[in-house]
Image 1 (cartoon, rainbow, N blue to C red):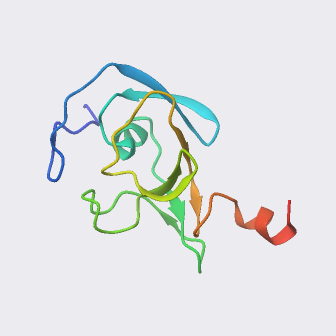
Image 2 (cartoon, rainbow, N blue to C red):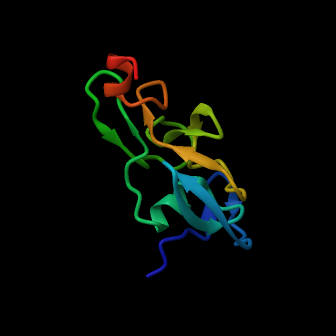
Length: 112
């Protein structure tokens, strides 16, 4: 079963581009150019995109139309990027978001 969508309710028809490489938390992953970043991650088995600020609970795709904030991640150094509506490009750097930053809680608390 194909894990990629063909038609997005906001972006419309998803044209499958060439296969591109991007990084997710430092590891290389492949996806289709132009598809939402969240879909490329889902196809690669990634379910968690961020952890909440207050309770450190995991979040992933929920609405998939850019309205909620469950899919926000740090993309190319920019936090709070809605990955469900952000098209994938070659070489993107995608990182799990921790609260409002890319720095894990333990590192922020210890200053590392």
